[in-house]
Image (cartoon, rainbow, N blue to C red; front, top):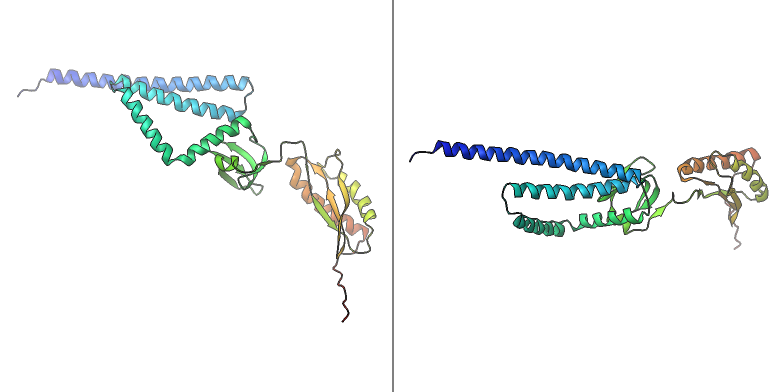
Length: 266
């Protein structure tokens, strides 16, 4: 049986041209997807959309457009796209069942973007982690703790937990206590601490720092020392307040607190 080289050559040439055309279609499609996402990003930026929301919308659009591109290329090669769509739906169900946790994180991420209990840059406690939010992704929230450790928390864990957002309000309170020894006048200590607290850098003038008698114990009087500051300055004010208490009491010559033992009679 003789081979019809002319027919084979024509078939190979046709297949090569079709592959080349399909590759060109893919490259053009990818360029158009990038172009569309770029335009969308500029429009959302011009309308002052939140950067996290922009990334979220762009990611979803990229996934959808890439699926459309794949279906279009398969149709170009003559593959029945209806069957492919059914196969894709079946695979999607199987993946959804296997990766239900990821889909839950994805859905939770959408709710976080819509309702915005926090945003990038906020200092929060969520999902058992405390720190600054550095990224809100499709599936995870990235939080950097004060000791500079990056923690990645699933969005479903964060959204299903109690979230404390310390950046929502203009200021927060720093809670410290100061133990006085027996014999030290608490009113004198209060009069010394209040003006000194107001002089600490980044302590707010309004509301003014609180210094009040909090409790009494076996060592003497306990003062509540409570300056106010912005969340960004919390730890600086926290440590400066501790230093100020020690310095003020030392300069005043206050005795160190000690436990008074009660004598019992037989």
